[in-house]
Length: 422
Image 1: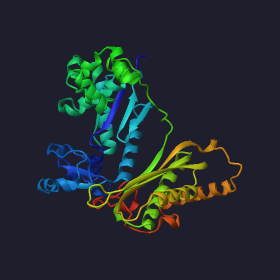
Image 2: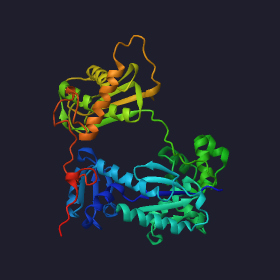
Image 3: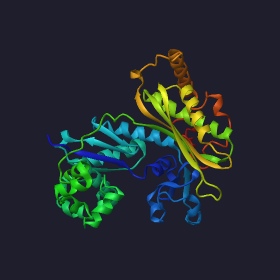
Image 4: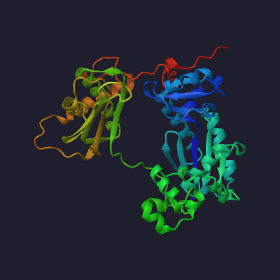
């Protein structure tokens, strides 16, 4: 049975999530900002039409936002994560073979649906997701994942096909591929696009026709697989079991610049606690830890940044052990006389927590530590993140990320439920 893939992608996901609970925003320009309300990370179609670019700092476009009455929101990741889960659960009703590719994208394996009209099936998926979650999606269908990506792009950019594009039923695929720039092909990065353009390969159609040996010399086996996918030969299977994580990171910009070691230690303790919770949630342990800090390069004054990697004596998922090592690292690289904007903690050399090798000279009670971490996670899961924390994390509000325009957590907080007046 030949493979068939459908890519379902939420349109302008963050902006669309904000619209679900404020329907009067339909048709109005919306932008969503990054942490500390810094840069634009999402735009509605109306905001894109105003020329607002992705990643542009908010302060640079403030006059434009005011002139066109653009609604500006702070990032609300708890809301977006919950809405994403609802979309994925809805898609599972249509196909059990599903790969969650990102927070707003999923591949569906439709190889067993060959007798169906896949265009109509895509429209049914689109209608159901809209009805059940309030979010608009686009659906692209093809015999490979790369072509499904292209089909989804066409579905988004062609209003008269109602958000669904089935390349399997397309009578003139070559014309469509000739309109797709090579840099817009899934898997083609900036450097590869530059090389291809230098050799006169500017469209997906031209890339499909290149010589196998030529593309392998310049892009390796990954490039050859991509070309084969463009030719309709499936080389990328559905990944239903995500690959094990190689690292975990918690990095944040501070709400205000800090200039003391005490404040930096508190920030690093908070970030270490958060990344340790992620580590235990993934049932992993870390053998390496990296701490980093940096000043704000966009502000006048002396600049400094540094990072340090520490090898841990044994693989651990204990917040206590990780904070101890993180503080040791940050004290080694911290320098007085600077105003710091950002710090971060990254855990590396991850191994399954059930396969940790013990140390003959480790005197600590690991079972006691395991029970402590379990109690810590249970309390914070029930009462909210940070309800119980280490004293080294402090209580300073200056370190907290600022969200001055964040919408309520409509779907995860009883006190934020929408109120209907009749």
